[in-house]
Image 1 (cartoon, rainbow, N blue to C red):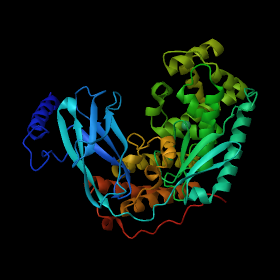
Image 2: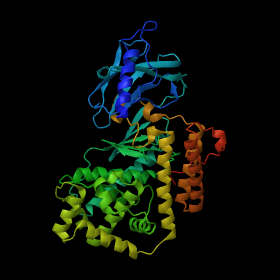
Image 3: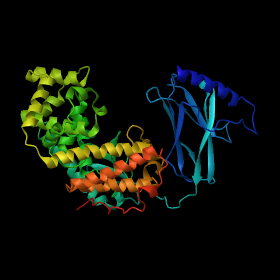
Image 4: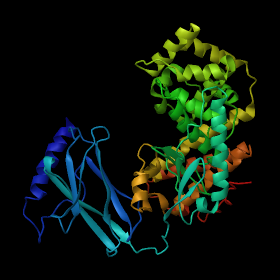
Length: 491
Ligand SMILES: [Zn+2]
């Protein structure tokens, strides 16, 4: 009700200040911030430089039914020349203007855009401060080919420098994935007819990788998401092969991810799936399967994935690999993942999902507790919870729920690089990210006390950031920072 009233007030205000009202100068004066329920974010993220190819995402948080509503963008001083028109999505309630304006020929200084939502009778201006061209942004798309994979990367990056090692690792991973499926007797011929398309970007987005039609993976020597590249590549290749050969029937997420983590030998880094499942249980972090199976991606990410891998490892041990893959590849249709799995379990083994979980837990409880594994599991969960908190606070464009990940193939076709090639870091970013790198390096060497100390330090910094409303001076958190030595990717 309050929102609706506010909306009516804002709408009324917009009539006063909107395009039809009395004007100052040539064009009507418009509000220089979006009306209450709209939020505009420009990309690539700030700071902006002349030469940037700008995009904008407009999010609506109000109560009106905005799906399908159009919004236009123009330069504020050329309001009649619409640069682009976009529609708000019914699902996300966002409208996106991809690469709406090339600032190459623009002067430095404030660049103002005019946004208009005609159906709502709303218009406003909003812009960015353009800094001078840095003169060092010369990255371009390039590609390399091998039998398994086509690699796309930017020139001048760590990926380009390490290309031979990356290709060897990808060839080995894909051969291993094929042999893992072949061991279950489900591979008559190599299903990879077309080389897999893999894109390597120097920025961390999400947890270090995401898959659309192609796998986009972070590759940088300073990877503060701490994910081992070969592990991530193996994980993504499992998904691709799974999708290529397991084409009949549903693929419940808990098995999709469990299989990828199990076959790649761990989530982010190597670790025995069953031992880690037992550690989750001992640490009281275990999530009942009934609570996560039907909305798997909403569960705490690390716990869900580790548990899913433990379940697949358990079923492999219990039934044998061939039987598990046969079970997973031949699931019946059903209205939910839990119903699908339960029906199949009943038909084949005469038990339900709850009963299976009871036996799974009972088995995990028989495993001997390992304090090192428990420390690793607890710190891994803490690390990625902190990482997402940092992304939310400092770089929402990297957090998976608010990520800026424009279509990579369109970017390649149009030689656009900025959105994935560059991210300028403030001292706060350098301090926090170097602490994350330190925490990952400590976890890799089982130096759990050091990892814990780095995480405590990050937690304190993020708390200060939250308390300061985001206006934190880096001097107060220990500038200058001793940058951690570059992590070693290849032995
Ligand atoms: Zn996955």
